[in-house]
Length: 65
Image (cartoon, rainbow, N blue to C red; front, side, top):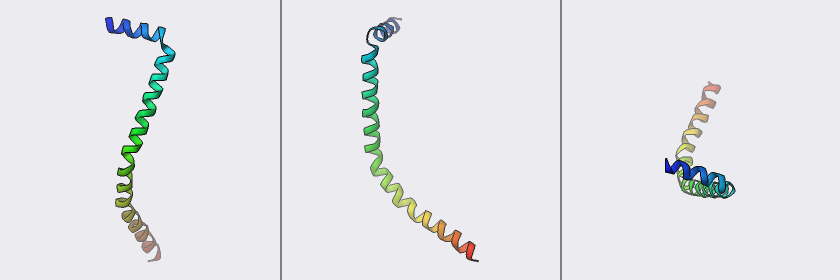
């Protein structure tokens, strides 16, 4: 129960600081998430681009027949 009391006291006394801390941590998380996802997205784009182009080609071929 002591942890709950500490959390309530912290929330009561330092709510502005807690909000700033949460926002800073959220920004850091989003930045690292985007930076780590960027190389993966390039790979996925290179892998999916031929499939999308082939699907468009098949749709055009089916419309022409």
